[in-house]
Length: 149
Picture 1 (cartoon, one colour):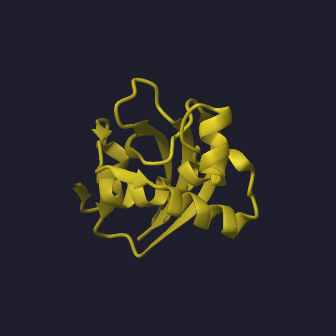
Picture 2 (picture 1 turned 135 degrees about the vertical axis):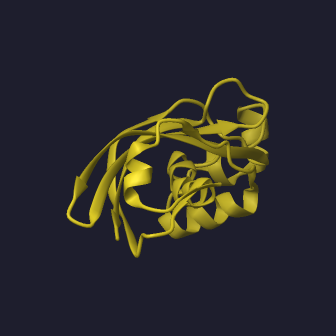
Picture 3 (picture 1 turned 60 degrees about the horizontal axis):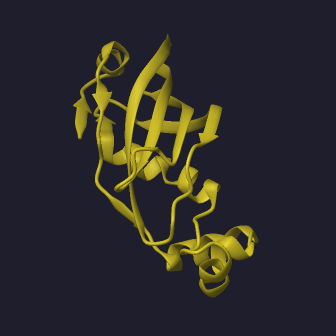
């Protein structure tokens, strides 16, 4: 984990953050996400049909993979002077490869740019979520976070 004392230190950071630790995306997590979102498409929740029709396990929802970004970012970095952080959105999200049930994912991030405001910093990160054993990432997203001191 990269620890920054101030927002100014974060704004000046030019290296890559990570990689973080592996997180297993198992069928139980996929099922809970399907229940929470109402997205019960068979490729996510029916292992027998997936084995029969896809020749392998179910795959995680793309938005489940995207929703792992906060967990990943929390383990990659912290800013000691920050009293509040807010997800401001995403500029770009690309799902590059499916995450099969039982796969491990982990993340890396790079600060693309930032703008300082009074006691605040708007930061754009390029976040890449990798799939264990795969050369192709699950997703690449540009996320925006507001940090307040």
